[in-house]
Amino acid sequence: MENKRELQDLIEKYFSGQMETSEQKTFEAKMATDAALAEEYVSYQKLMKSFGLYASRKKIRKKLEEVHTGMQTSVDSSSIRPAKIRSLLSDPKLWSAAASVALIISIGTYLFMNYVNSLNGNDKAHYRELRRDIEAVKSSQNKIIKELNDKPAMNQATFGGTAIAISADGYVLTSYHVVKDVESVYIENKKFSRLKLKKVYTDPRLDLVIMKVEDDSFKTFGNLPFTFRKNNLDLGEKVYTLGYPKQDVVFGEGYISSLNGYEGDTASYQIAVPVNPGQSGGPLFDEQGNLVGIVSGKHTENEGSAFAVKANYLKKAILANDSLNANIHLPKMNYLKNQGKIQMIKKMQDYVFEVKGYN
Amino acid sequence: MQRNYTDKEIVDGIRNDEKGVLEFLYKENFHAVAYFIYSNSGSEQDAKDICQDALILLYEKIRDNSLELNCSVKTYLYSVCRRLWLKKLYYKSKYTGKIDEFEDVFSTTEQADAEEKEKDFARMEEAMNGLGEPCRTIIEDYYIHKLTMVEICEKFGYTNADNAKNQKYKCLMRLKKIFFSA
Image (tube, one colour):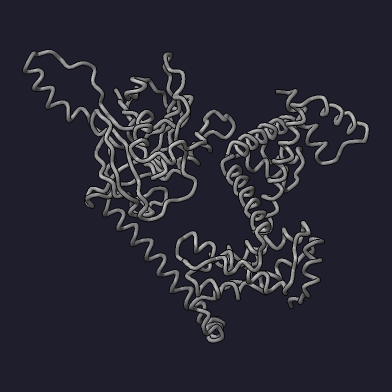
């Protein structure tokens, strides 16, 4: 580590031209013989070239942003008769009158909204999380079984959901509410059978939890065939889900019905995809097989509208949590792009898991 | 009062990083561009973005001596903005005409070059956005704002400059990794 850092210092010193001539010569000689160093240097050069471009553009943009704010422009409808508008607003009395009206309105709105919120009691009145209460479904079955042979059912999962693998080395993503009050979490699917997980990072705000497989038998998920989609989705784009509302994987298809989620939540999409309890944490894919979101809940009143946390928020949360450790290697290549839907789903299934939580 | 620049003064001014030139250009051209964009289903935000993009393009072209100007700077900027906006509309599939009709300002090599740069920038921007704190600020402070290691050490409350240096090294390695893996 120390050694590498010193080499990096040398590279930077040479790059910025701060070396003495003799030192420069030694460094050049070293580069001529040490291919690894030369390669390091070339990649540093490349990095700095892009970084220079980035820095200069950011600087100009910031400067122009200031200019723009200074201009206080507005050429749209209001500027059709700019002279008149200016003469009105230049009257200080009018200004103070306008300001006090604005103040009263804003205080009024604030109080009113508080009142409305207190009436509501619960902000998420029409939002339902899609955790599956296996207990409830099972208890009636249990009764029957019990009556049949009077044997207690074996160790049963209390909560269920869906999870998706996000890195070859065993990181898995699901909804926070699926695992929030369980003690141990397992995931299961056909290919990898049953794996034990531990929580690594939780983000209740995004309803997100990152977990890692901790199972002696586990080595790797292998190369994940999909990537996180980089740009935002457009209204009406086709999307797919895979999830475990029952013990077998279930496929769902629909489209993006709104770019914001429950009550205007900008971190999620509203989707018109049939979803049921147990599908929380399930992946949402676009037609190219890019991961575009994680299913989190549905509207209780509006039939057919569900919500999914946007992939770029997920990615941000993952990377921000990972600032210095650099442990989570997100997939980089999309191998599903031109494979057709059936093939895509077949491949994807291996990386979607049923989550089972036990108290 | 704002001073006026001739085209030659503008080019020379940008080349020498003279203060006020970009500001002048922006103020001088924004309204015309904005008017074009408003009348083609754009917002003020769009107008601002496009105008800034065009100025950045002009700036970079002047700085690396690749600008071939055969009209006034004003006309040049306007046609660049027009082109950028039509292209954007095209990708949003709102504009169905041919962009080729407006190719007069750029040759194909220039376009390829600009796209290459755009990609480069986007990649770095993404890498920087993905870097997380405190890395992002450390890298920006060191490489853009040119703070010394001692200053960074004080700003972030590291126990000594060597610690800060180590942190900066880790951050740079992380940036490198994200950048080259994207």
